[in-house]
Amino acid sequence: MIEVTGLTKRFGKTLAVDDLSFTVPSGRITGFLGPNGAGKTTAMRLILGLEQPTAGRATVNGVPYRELRRPLTRVGALLDATAVQGGRRAGQHLRWLARSNGVSRARIGGLLELVGLGRAEHKRVGGFSLGMKQRLGLAAALLGDPEVLVLDEPANGLDPEGIRWMRGLLKSLAAEGRTVLVSSHLMSEMAVTADHLIVVAQGRVRVDAGITELVRPGTSLEDAFLDLIGRRAR
Ligand SMILES: Nc1ncnc2c1ncn2[C@@H]1O[C@H](COP(=O)(O)OP(=O)(O)O)[C@@H](O)[C@H]1O
Ligand SMILES: [Mg+2]
Picture 1 (spheres, rainbow, N blue to C red):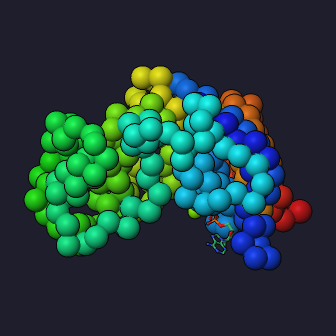
Picture 2 (picture 1 turned 135 degrees about the horizontal axis):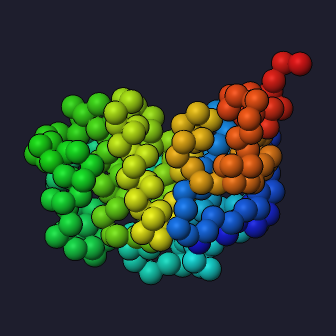
């Protein structure tokens, strides 16, 4: 479970995250939906202890991320799939991550297969498409077999088949009882992936509701989303 309470982050004059409070329970996919610049990445970085909040707090299973022991075994994160050094080979990258985090390397082969990179193990990441980098990032997030997953726009760069595959994988991870927080700026994708949506705009939570409450007959998903973030032309 992830708990966010009054979480606020200011960068100079920009209030990136404005008094966010929400809970992400285990066993379901929680979609973190909002337009570009809404504060999704900043909120996730705060949850992962990569930024210091201006106010408020975030905990993972009751503990701030920075206080977790062996965090890779508790929380798997995919933030910026392109951050991997291009000269590294896929398998080598995962082995390095495992070694530097005290995690078993035994899962690496299976994980590469799981994310569809079985044949790319010895290829350099620099030659990967964005979709392949997302797949590698997902393997890295799963390396420590964590109970909590924080994934920032993991579908970016995937082709339609890849998006469908990712959706299935996230659903199975949630069905195993894991906590899955996944961000997106695409309502249509979240509507078919998430069980629950937290909609943010301009750093604030606009909606925190189950997907069935949001998707009503007679309104298109896109209209519902634009309504929620207050952007629809009237
Ligand atoms: N390191 C930073 N320094 C200054 N401004 C930032 C920084 N990170 C994010 N921002 C600003 O915070 C706001 C929210 O950004 P972000 O969290 O990346 O939104 P999202 O992920 O929803 O697109 C944006 O206005 C962005 O420009
Ligand atoms: Mg972002």
